[in-house]
Image (tube, rainbow, N blue to C red; front, top):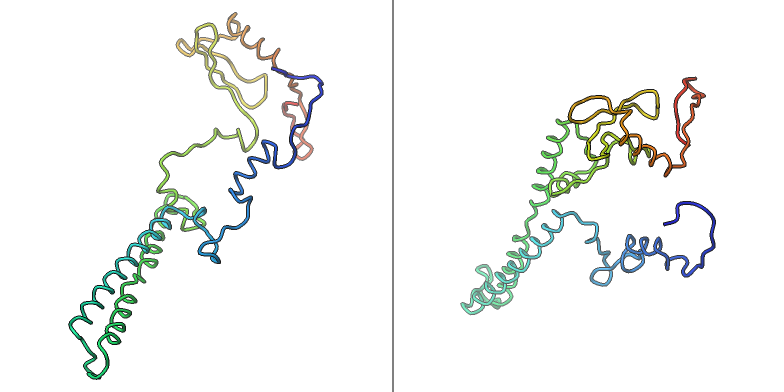
Length: 235
């Protein structure tokens, strides 16, 4: 593997043909970021839908199919029994049963489901706020509730671009590393089992020497222009 130096390369792909371009395509979707259409004209938002929204959509579809089936059965039975409008007995039975079937189909629509879902999410949001969790969107409450694995980085790795070593294994022995920031004057290396200082042990020196030889970072003391405080910074 090459760690540093100069060289020449041959360009085999540019733009969306590169690996970064492929990642951009995967993020944008199969159609290159163009908005998908549903039923010819409606936008397809299924990719960004939450698990609860998907479940409600499936429930609505099932209720609609059941309602249509019940209405068709009632219409057939009513026409077969020649049920007419009591206020207008001379009207045909099929016309009266169409009105009954449409009325039943409208009544079968659960208008209260969105309200119940909103109230449930609001209660969950209230419980999270009581535990000092800031929730900006109600959908985040149910999305977090359906998560089975949460991966988080160590503080500073992504936010500050820093990594701190706290444990070390060298020569078949485990060591604990103590310190604060990049200050080389603070911190010790101790044996994890006995707690004795192990800075002068040969295995520790060999491991640290290998790390120094594989690293081209320099550590220098700089002065903060705002506070005037001197601190160690890597370059």
